[in-house]
Image (cartoon, rainbow over all chains, first blue to last red; front, side):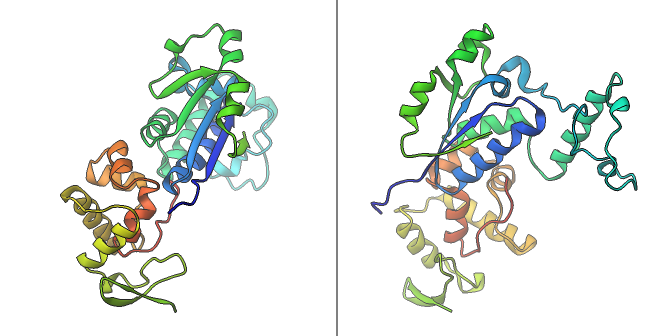
Length: 167
Length: 105
């Protein structure tokens, strides 16, 4: 019983809808396996814990080489969404809506609910001090469950011995 | 197949100590596994969760995930993690005599 608890730390640097999920899913799986979890939100990753942004994360089809039209059920094989089409007004809203639908189909909750689940399960969530200063934010801009705004150096101290995953 | 004596009964277990056959399970076995996992006593709420997991597994063929447990029982994430500290989904599944939960959420 004296064995040391495994620790994992995630650095979330992206604010796109699709890039929000890896840390949420892996962090949740880690908590489910009895692993200590710390998540550091930096740069655009801060959107994942910002009240104004958390429910408005988007996925753009522009320059997205992975999103194929066949995902939407067209028999078009590897054909991507044509770039000229991706720039049309409403396309980002469409791909965002579509991705949210795909995420809900596998039973994964929306980002705001996920963040709450992680906090309730004991994950430690921190905002990046430099980004907070740069974006003119304050602790009041963050959702419940965020412990504090810390510096990169603080994060290094907190994650000694942890496995660190950068997203 | 490895076996282990739990609460006086010899039962087949896998390499992580999960019961291989849920039908050999009984409440004494659950209490014994819980003690080994660091839960000295199973309360009424613990039993509610264990019974939900067994019912869910017999219906779906696999132990429920964390979110399936919270949505299925109405017990909050916070409470679940305090009832079964350090990895509730795996821990409940083990105590309930089921295999590891399948699924990510």
